[in-house]
Length: 273
Image (tube, rainbow, N blue to C red; front, side, top):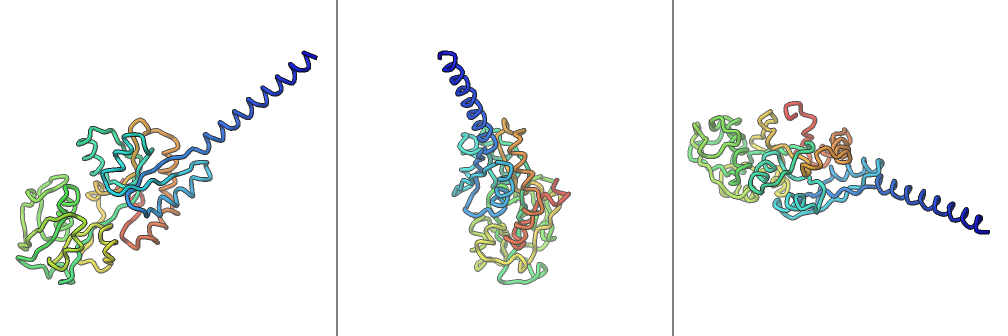
């Protein structure tokens, strides 16, 4: 009798162990990865979530209201990755906040454009015309490079130029610095404005009607958007699968269809790699 009970007990323990192991395997294959974004609309990441779901990876998109939150949440371990910043923003953030956030892969690039309600051609700008540019370090530098590529000014070799790096103002335009979010709203008061893609989209400005658009070259790399993680996770295989899923034709199609030129798939440009 005792022998039979012992045998039944061993069968029960073995079955229970197999069940627990199976459960652990299911948990590992069903890993949830929290990815922080700014705003409430990220159709590319939603497509990525669909792609990796077949590999048992569940992406949970966590929305933040401003640019200061996703890196703080990442450094504090509240999220696993984020998808909102550029190379330059990340580098600047790490220096200022003593964090060790690294790039996992590129996502999109959103070309900056020069818009105007008063002129239709870049050659119509004349001496004394006001041109609005963003006043934060990253976007100011980008706007100045945009104006240089348009032939309006010349800059020295500073990687991220500022107003003091202007060596020549060929036309004699007057630069007006203001918050990046206000550039589109300033179009009634200035001759032209350098407007970020997201701001232009919110203001319903058609990129096809821009006076001048940023050309995507090797100089554009600092402004490429990236997916980021903490340095300890730079070799995380699950995170790498997510980046690999991002770099697919399916996601590139979403970028093209959803953003109508406001954003472009950065990984498809060799000069940005």
